[in-house]
Length: 122
Image 1 (tube, rainbow, N blue to C red):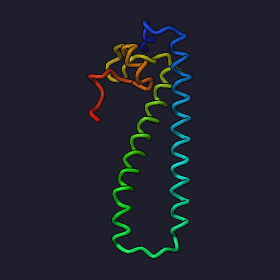
Image 2: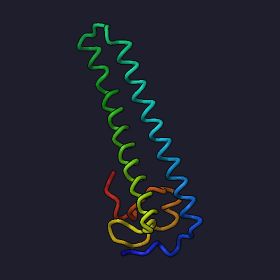
Image 3: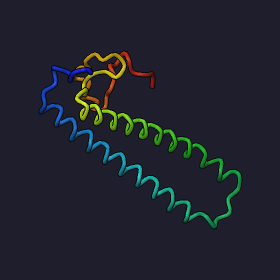
Image 4: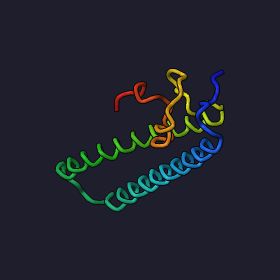
């Protein structure tokens, strides 16, 4: 089984756990608020008759909302994986290669689970 990234102190890992939990809570809160706002908007306009032009104006907004949702869902997945790695004792080691992830990358992106060169294109 891989060992913990030796360059990371227990204090750093503990601080990262708190950051990750706060990020997860913030994203889950934002997603919950967005869903509630969408339901409210749909309920307010449910009785209004709309024409094809009205619906076509909603399409770009819906596509943007879906893209943002997808990004947030991916980030939540990465946060959960990073928290799992902390629990396993493998935080700071790449899921792809097992090599250490630089501390600077983890400071900038605490949910990073691979090195920059191993990350899929965005």
